[in-house]
Image 1 (tube, one colour):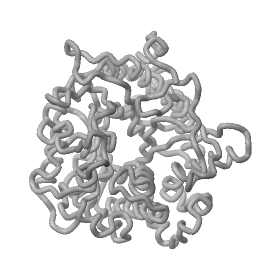
Image 2 (cartoon, rainbow, N blue to C red; image 1 turned 135 degrees about the horizontal axis):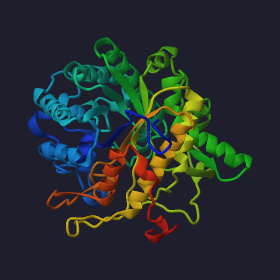
Image 3 (cartoon, rainbow, N blue to C red; image 1 turned 60 degrees about the horizontal axis):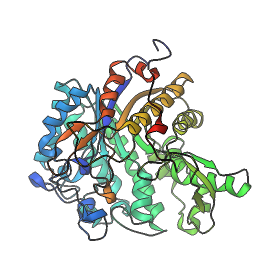
Image 4 (tube, rainbow, N blue to C red; image 1 turned 60 degrees about the vertical axis):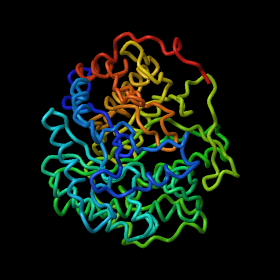
Length: 462
C-alpha cells in the first residue's frame, strides 16, 4: 500500500450485475427459455407477477450502459452469461447470435478500458435441461463443462477472470429446498443432490478451462457469518450447523476436498455417501474466490427449523435494509479473516456487496439522494481495508448492483443499484452513491476517511 488510507496498488474497482436481472429480451436471437423465465411467468411466484422480459433492457442498451460505467470511472464489470442464449437446448447446437452478443459486450468494455469479469452461471438454467432433471441429473456436470468450453474458446483471449458458479447455496436453498426461487422445488431430499451436482459441475468446468484457457478461473460464494445468540451450548451448536450448511458446504469440498461433518447431522438420511471420485472432481485448483457479502445472522437453537435447526434473532437498535438484512460491516472483515484462517493464503475478490434501501420510482430533478446507501458503502469498504491491513489478499471490489434491476422473486420492489432505473422509461440516473463511489475509485479509497454525514440522521432503527 502507498499509505494506510488507500487500497493496494492495482486494486480493482467495479460493479456487478447478472444476465436475467438486467438484459431483458430473454428469447431474442434464437435463445431458449430458462428456468427463471418459466418460474417468473408462473402466477404467484413473484411480487406483482413481475418478470425479466424487459428488466433494464441491457440487451439493447449495452452501449449506453458501458458509457455509463466509463462516466463513473469503473475499472471492472462483473456480469453473467445466459446459458440458454449460447445453447438454447442447454447443450448440442450452439447459437452464434448469442455468443456474438457477449463478444460485442466484452469488446466494448475493453475498448473503454474496463476489465470484464465473466460468470458462467447466475441461476438461469436452460429450461430444456431442467426438463431432463436440471441440477438433479448427474450428467449436468458434463453439460456445464461443454457450455464453459464454448465460452472459453471464444473469449479467453480477452476475458482474464472467469467464475463458474454464483452462490450455489442460494440455488439449492431457494430453488430445491424452500421453493421460493427457480425451479421452485421444495424437497429435503433434493437439496443435497442439487448442491453436489452444482459442485461437480464447477469442478468439470474448471477442468475444461485448464485444457483450453490461459488466464484465471474461480468460484463465487455468498458467506453469511453465523454468530451464536448466547453462550448456551444449544445456540453454539445451532450457529455451527448454520455455518456448515450455508458457508462450508461449498467451500470445504472446493478447497479442502471434503464436506463438513455436520452435513450428515443436518440432512440425516437425505445426505448420501458421495463417491471419492466426485470429491476429487470438485476439488480442482482455482485461482481465486469471489465473496458475496450482505449481512450476518445471530443464530439461536430452533429445533423446528429444519433441516438446520437454527433461527436468526433480530438485533435491537440496529439498522436493517429493505430486504430485512442487518447492516453489519464488521461481519465482512470477520469473514475475510476467517477465509484466510480456514483456507490459507489465496486471492479474494468482493464480487458482490450492496444494499436495498428505499428510492423513489423516479429521479427528482435529475438526482437520487441516497445517504444511507452511501454510508453502507463507506463502512463496508472500510471493513475491507481493515482486513487487507491484517494481511488478507483482497484484490478487488464489485458493488452490487450497477443499476436497479429485476430482484428475482421480489420483482422490481427492491432497489440495490448505485444507478437508478426508471422502470417506465428505463432512464438511468446515477444515485449520489454512484457519484461517491466514483470519488472512492479516483482516490483509490482515500476519501473513505473524509468526514461523513452520520447514518442516524437518515435511518429508522429496528
